[in-house]
Image (cartoon, rainbow, N blue to C red):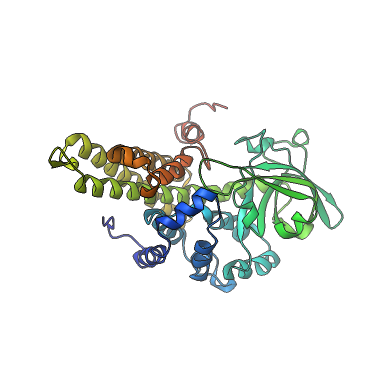
Amino acid sequence: MNFSTGHQHQDIRDAVAQLCQKFPGEYWRELDRELAYPKAFVDALTEAGYLSALIPEEYGGSGLPLGAAAAILEEIQLQGGNAGACHAQMYIMGALLRHGSDYQKEKFLPRIATGELRLQAFGVTEPSSGTDTTSIKTVAKRNGDHYLVNGQKVWTSRAEHSDLMLLLARTTPKKEVAKRTDGLSIFIVDMNQAKQNGMTIKPIRAMMNHSSTEVFFDDVKVPAENLIGVEGKGFRYILSGMNAERILIAAECIGDAKWFISKATNYAKERVVFGRQIGQNQGIQFPIAKAYANMRAAELIVHQAIALFEADEDCGEQANMAKMLAAEASWEAANICIQTHGGFGFAEEYDIERKFRETRLYQVAPISTNLILSYLSEHVLGLPRSY
């Protein structure tokens, strides 16, 4: 199906689609069986310059706007791939670009742009805090020209395949700060050095292949020069990148929804039961049509959020709605696709069950639907804070 409606960055979409043809369903199925990292795919994206889309040209990147990054990730999903293998590099980048020092940018960005370094690990979530980020227990204590980090992170995807991690840690105890969001700092961690000096990584076998891990820090040394911005202001720096994260994940969900709708539509045209195409039955065609309408509605909010973000205007409302509505649209389309295929929807060779599992994640991560509803209730509708 042709889902184009005069999209911006169509040339990028076409080029990404062509690249993805080299990595068909068989490639992703084999990786999924082994929970293996798609190195060849990530290398191809890097070589083509797509993972450095947001890096300024002066540091070796393309200097493209967020909409271009969204187009890249959406197209990967639309072509049946899994951008979860590399999307973090897109949205983690904001903290370094906006708040990093000139030294940090010059040291890391050119090497990230060439693929010499991968910035794919985002160390935030912990077993006891979940989405209550201000209650994290990982601490970083200043000791001369470095910090000593102790603690644990969980659901840190791609930690085994990343050279750098963006790490959030508490530098001032929560009981000693005026606001619970104070006293948190972010660091760039050299994973290769850290693994030799107190950091251990334990893989987590999960429902989908995101190479998720637990990461343990035992007196891990991080140079003080790797502190991003001002000590204690890390929570604000993390927040500044969350709108981009939500928008990019929403774009991926739109790509997923389009893949499911295309798959269901084509099968409904081809499958003949009782002497007629099953797509002739309203019980089959109406749910697909409804999923299509909901996808298009969510897509409009995604585009609105991108436009506001690129204009440097407040887009918190739109970014959160885009993520929630796009995730719901992709999940609806996934269910309809399985229902249309019947038993074949559960067969590995059709790729539906793999994509079904992958898109289910976005009802929960990187932020749950309930927290988005809490944000809209409090900050948009002016209702009392619920937590």
